[in-house]
Length: 171
Image (cartoon, rainbow, N blue to C red; front, side, top):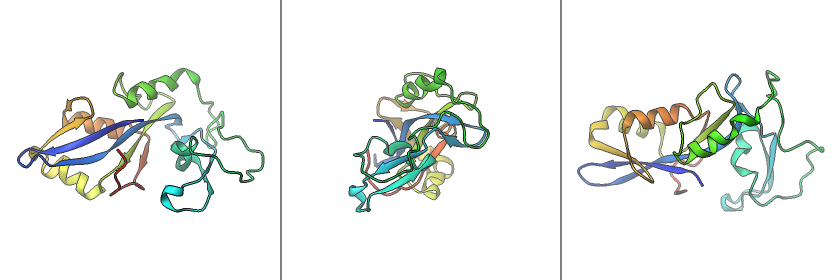
């Protein structure tokens, strides 16, 4: 699902898709790790051979049609951060789900949950839109107008940043 974010050029009304925030589940902010161990993935849309993704790379692929690849009887999700060994807590997970849609305050770095932000534009163009030419743009999500500072806060508080979709239409 997720929530898309846009910049609209004030003069021409051109809409630029900046990216999408999605709930990413349990996350250790100290180490930058999610609780996803792996995902068996068939990325036929990208014309890839079936393969396994690990860690943060596998976050949004666990619900894609599963394929049969041996993963040594390891679980798809882990209960503790693999680096610092802190347990992932169930109490915070709901925050990322509501935050994804803008229905509650976004989880900050004190929670053990996060959202991801998948970029639709390059870091270079994002910098121009947000900082060099920001007075030329209005900013929106799928529901309402938002201030530039709110958009920056949203992106900063997404523990997982994904750039593999830049240039693709994934709204």
